Amino acid sequence: MTDITMGSKNEVTLWKWMRYSALLLIPLAWGHVLIQDILVGGHGINLDYVAMRWSMLGWRVYDFFLLAFAFAHGVNGLRQVLNDYIQSARSRKNVAVGLFIFWLLITLVGAAAIIGGVRLPN
Amino acid sequence: MQPNLKTTLSGYVTYKGGQGLYVFLLHRITGLGTLLFLSLHILTTATVYFSPSAYDRFIEVFRWPPVMLAEIILVFCVIYHGANGLRLAYIDLFKPELWEARRSNKAVVTTLVVAILLSLPAAAVMGYNLLKYGFGLF
Image (tube, rainbow over all chains, first blue to last red; front, side, top):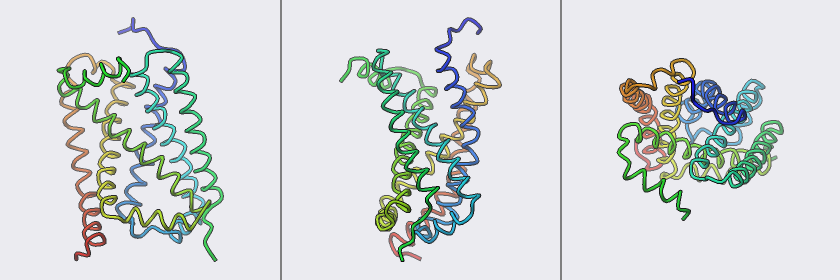
């Protein structure tokens, strides 16, 4: 098993990172699903609920970690899947750049909301 | 369609990979489905800051019965992808020798059973909410 040719150093780092982030996402993502979907449920969630939740710093930190790890794990996973269907190095690079921009924009939007908080209508 | 994409997709049908192939595809489909939801979820939830009135309209969409049903499927996706991901991460990081033989077959089935067992109480609670709020039962 030792003569396997490894990919680039970056790919190996990302490959490992996918697995370590997975271990962290089990409590983060499963906990989030358990609380929001099962214990609270969609009909208990509204602006007031989010405002109440985000009045506690701990939950904002929790959501920030969830945003950072889950979305990056997902977008890198999409990149790895797409690489299976794309052969040319140039196309792979274009896809990677496009997905990086996609990841960055949505992460910034999400992070801005977590930091800015709920703007309750007067 | 790109020739190599066509080859890959038709290969999924003709390749006799059996269990390993199905699990590989299930891991991908549950992961991609979760990512699709997650992208929309981040953007719609962010409206609590950017446009609170839009948030009120979005939560109405999430209370529509077909979306509530999709949410039950989503929860299964998150549970299965996580359980199977744990199996993959454990073998990759700590027991790579398990990949060699067909010894991982049993763990593949165990993972699916565990994911279904964990999903059942979730589906029961969410199914109850669907019948209660979506169809006015109970």
